[in-house]
Image (cartoon, rainbow, N blue to C red):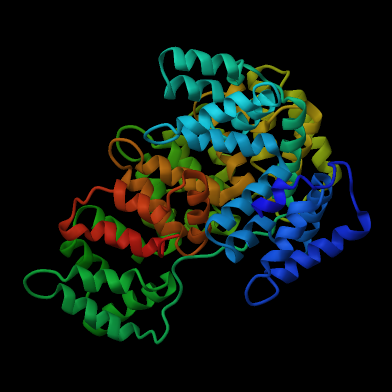
Length: 516
């Protein structure tokens, strides 16, 4: 592939062979996903020679055929340096500024800076497309390129890099031309992509609840506890199977499994195992209760739970909360929060979000109303955003956010971060991130739970338990793409082993499902 690229024989950007777009997309699909093994020469020939605009149309057609982006197919069909090279080619076809923005981010994140990469990109792009790179950087990450350079470098070296960067985009409000087009396209891709949610925990075959119940009792009977037996049973059963084990334990042994587990386990391992043994509705209700009890409120937990659960899950959570705590969750929220934030949570806890696909005509109206609200005072702006973001379906909101770029030349995420504040900002931002890419939202929440000094074990347990049978495999993939480290590796490095023999960490790794 490198030899092909060195020839400089790619079609000019504006050249599109309209009659070959579908044929090329079908050829790529047939060369990879449709057969056993991969015909790499087809990928090399097409991706190395067709023009940029032509390939962009091919990628769109490919997504219609394969129901997944071509990047996902490359990751599953290719490997090693060849995979990385082909992904780089695809990323540059989609957007050169976005490719360099991601390269710059990876060169500076974490411990140490890849100075050769940083210097190379800053010098070679400073007179070409640095403004668009800056905007793409700001669109993808929670800070401007200017501020990340400022935090990651020092002295004259820093001053020179900042001069090449040219400005702080956290102070700006509008897109540069290419970035606006790219943002519009990203929301369009998000709306088109059919994501297959993949869990890491599946029902065990040859399942025998009575046998599991007897083995759990043996593991807890007498002096000492066999944590390995408990972990291997609980972490390898689906939640439905765990409920059967709870019932069998009581029917056969006349004992309450939950009480026995609480008496035999301790600290984070107990919290994790008990969380797995609860039904999803019971667990969510308990996490909502924990977020509101005692001094102080865990607003991030309330937001995360309510913006990511379906209407049905919220209704079940409401019922479990009332059964367990003898009051409604709405009453608890209103007594523990206040102002606009309380209104947002109250709206979400109704579980009344609209369902169904996007209404394109209505999306244009909603987008224009959001754009107009940006020019109003903060109260009116918050009311309008709440009325749309808390009630419309996720497919519809993807279309609204796409059209918002066209109406305002601004990014909905950046507007929220710039114009709103406090818990209201966090709630609105959580909705947008969840609409855009929910697995990515959870991946970022996991990263923040473990990075730095100490681990937010409550957040870590909450996400690992609640997503293990839903989309934890997808979350793993997003985590690896964003942080260049697998979730499995990150858990191994970042979690503190507070329980004997690291049983807590072992259980988390089992839920994670493997290394990427």
